[in-house]
Length: 117
Image 1 (cartoon, rainbow, N blue to C red):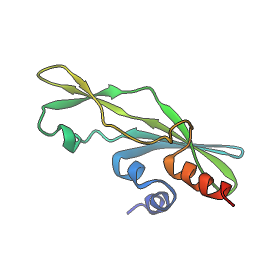
Image 2: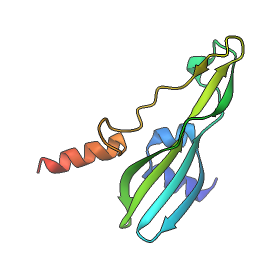
Image 3: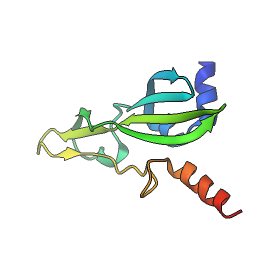
Image 4: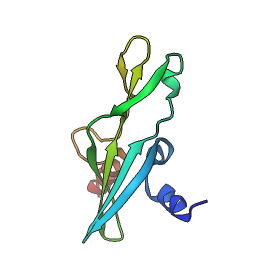
């Protein structure tokens, strides 16, 4: 097993590790950019339909917990799915970003707790 994957599993939300592939990373000074693409596995919620992976939505960028003094930005590309019979475009309903922010839900909750002290 890749030791970097074990490290990533500790640092990032489980949702990303389970449903997305880390495609590349980039470090620029005090910034760390991690790029993810949703895996092409057909979601369970679409298993009753005949669907195929049908490209990606526009990439979103969200801020996550800082790591070793570096700001972490997650660049996420979600997949679209196309029904083979009805040509209907479908997508998973992800809650990746805390409402009203550009941060992960976990990071926003962490900051909320800190602000109470």
